[in-house]
Length: 306
Image 1 (tube, rainbow, N blue to C red):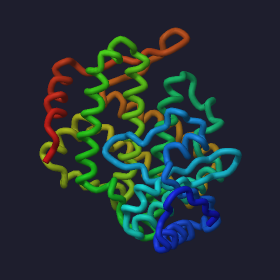
Image 2: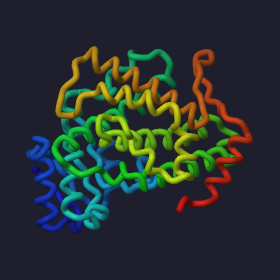
Image 3: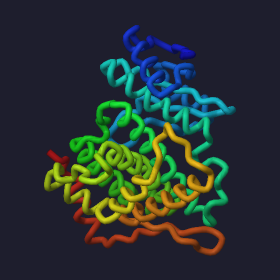
Image 4: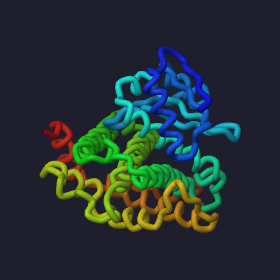
């Protein structure tokens, strides 16, 4: 492990756990930055000046940045210090999966030609990122790592609540009402993190069937049926055909998977309540759920699930 520490860093046990996670995935020589300035470090490596860790109900413990043909794992030291060593090992094993996919070029980069419209490309990218998370988590399952906290039923219920709150807040924001592009960007951010959450949720379910939905509370089931519902079987069918991050995919197969992933995201976005469509040389973004439907969502959003 090629390590740089910026700030207090981690304990020796924490560093050993990081090395174990990377080695388990065959990435023992990975470049890693452990930093107390996580957001600033990611912004500096990516030039994404608006990058933040605000998303859904979870914390961002690490991010793998690919730039200049090299991947760097940036670890959020403030979060990692609060985690047991087993979680730190798992975290680095997961990030090692991103390194593998980056090294093989199995993401959406350079594949803009797979779809015609800009909005189709946006959805394909959301689907591709979720696909990455699923493939990595399937690798970790095969190596015997425990289920990610993100994939547990309590986390699923909390994520559904945050999804509902964010969608309703975006709709009720007067600035978004006056600017459809601003609304579409807010919904896209929410859609992106929630799609990844679904990828985690699917990854540890045996055979990708019997997905544990029976464990949802009545409130959780209501949110699930409202926001995911009949889109779930199609997502599971797609994921069932996907190799883990430890296995490569040929070019034609990958292109087909990415197109299908974009189609699944279009279905999820519609369930969330919005739809893109081509309009002239651009595209439109419209709400497709009724005011009455929104009212029931607002009512649920106002009370946190127990």
